[in-house]
Each structure stands twice: as C-alpha cells, then as structure tokens.
Amino acid sequence: MSKWKKVLVGLVALGMVLMPVSVSKADAVEGDEKPYISLGADLTKEQKNTVLSLLDVTEEELADYEVIQVTNKDEHDFLDEYLSDSVIGTKALSSVRIEKAEEGKGISVVTKNITYCTSGMYTNALITAGINDAKVTVAGPFNLSGTAALVGAMKAYSTMTGEDLKKENADAATNELVLTGELGQELGAEKAEELVALVKQRVLDSDVETVEEVKEIIKESAGELDVKLTAEQEQRLAALLEKIKDLDLDVDKLKQQAEDVYNRLKDLDIDLDQAKGIFGKIVQFFTEIADKIANWFAGLFG
Image (cartoon, rainbow, N blue to C red; front, side, top):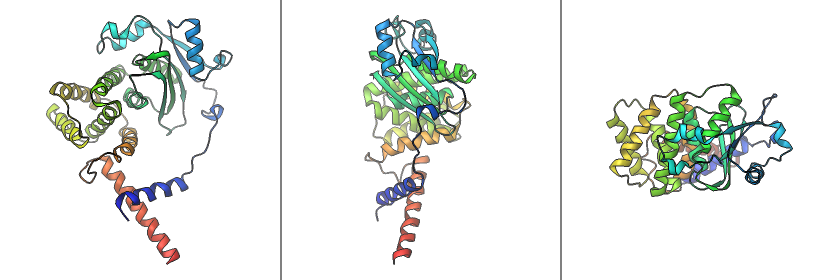
C-alpha cells in the first residue's frame, strides 16, 4: 500500500470514529451570550438590507444580536500604516457576523462579496490577533476588498468576550492580512495563504532569534512550495514574522491551522519526505494509524 493510500485509510478510519455531530445555530454556544454583528457605519438602508441578507439575519432577528458599528475612522486607525488612503476609502461598508463557538472548535470563516481576502487569510489573521473558537461571516453590499472587515471582526470579538485584544496582536494581524493579500496578487491567493501559514508555524515552532534565521525559513518554505519571492517580499515577510514571533500566541492552535494547510499541500508537487515541521509529522501520524488498521483487518480476516 502506498504512503498516500495509507494516509487516506487513516483519514477514513478517523472519520468513522470521530463522526461529526450536526449542531443548530441556536445550540452553537451555551449560555446567554449573544452573537455580534458589526455593521459598516456608512451603509445605506438598501445596502444594510443586502448585507443582513448575506449574513443570514433578518431585520426582526437583529434584536437577538449585539450590534456595533465600525466607522471609517476605525478603519484608518488600523489600516493607515499598511494601505493608502485611496485604498481604504472614505466609507465603512464591510460587515461581519461573529459567534463564539465551543472551545476547541477553532475559527471558521465564510466570505460573501469579498474579492481580495480569502477565508483562509481571515482565519490566519484572526488567530494572530488572539481570537479563538469563533464562527465568522464577512459580507459586503457589493464586491469589496474586505481588508477593513478584519477591524469589525476584532472589534466585535473583543466586545463580545469582554477581553481587549492586545494592540500588538491586532497590529500584526492587520499587517498579515494586508501582506498576504498583496502576495496573493502575485502568487495566487491560496499559494500566498499557504506560504504565510507555513512560515508562521515554522518560526513559532523553532528557536530562531535573528532576522537572518527567519529569512532562511522563508526561503526554504518558498522553495518547497515552488514560490519565487523578490528581495522586498522576503524582507516584508520577515518583518511580519519578527512581530509575530514575539506575540503571546497559542502554538498548538497554529499547528491546527498548519494541518489545514497540509490538506492542500498534499495535492501539490512537493516531496513531503523532505518537508520539516508539522507536515511531516502529520503524514507519519496518519500512516502509522493506517498500518495499525490494515494489520488489524489482516488479523481479523486472515
């Protein structure tokens, strides 16, 4: 049996044991904690109706949510360092619905009318911001880049949990989302998302101390993904990772994120036996499970 067939058997076997349970929206979070909706302060009535429809919320159901507004000033406060005024614009339109999920569920993101930021980009950035276990829907009244929606998601989560997100985490998350989006314009969105997730996991999972060591990780990871970066892109990515490695982040949650990336990497033309870090461990883990299952069946029916 080939390695990948063994991995597949392991995944199927795990799926049989860990069968997912369907949970309704009403049962998603225990207790009286209300979900939050962050609305762009400059939405017209018609645009607000469009956004609410995309967020799967009626005007009547809005009373069941805590509603906050994000202003254009809020957007500029977070984004001015990374985007020009012309890109940020003069109106706050991006809107977000965010619900606290059960502990250990992680972050899930759905986007609607968002053209620049992928759900994976939001997920990666929200983890960097220090957000855990949340269901997030991002929507615009028409096609928007979506960069400003991160501001609404962070603001809503902070208000919902009563926990202030650390300024340095929020800054790094904003930096990450913008840079990943820009890399996505050159490399393709998924490739950029994979690269940033991979180098972030590796930097946090090692004892690198210097920017030169960080750059070496970036070069190795880019090579494995068959990505060519310019010197400027390497420098900007290294500067971001220097920020991230000094944050108080849950490395285990980042490894969960890396596992999701692995599921896409396995379809690429990469020699995973040469890959370092969590990806190789995941392959080994599922291969060992597959071997045990195969041996068990052989003993049962042999």
